[in-house]
Amino acid sequence: MKKWHPFHKVLGALFLITGVIFYITPIPGTTLLIILGLVWLIGKNRTSYFFKEILGKKVFKFLRLGKLIKKID
Image (cartoon, rainbow, N blue to C red; front, side, top):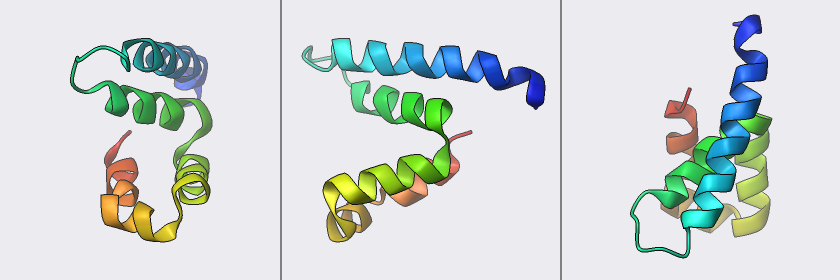
């Protein structure tokens, strides 16, 4: 998995930028692109911590983002 590390960083940044650009359009799935980009760029644990801090624990649990982030790989 070590040789995929630079590829994941580039692809994660690409997903993140694409998700932010398309967020203002009515294309579905842009939020998933942003979450996928963050997971690939900074990792699962940091992404979970980031969303817990931003949204709060109750909203994070209500949206079930923890389960979604764990399934992404």
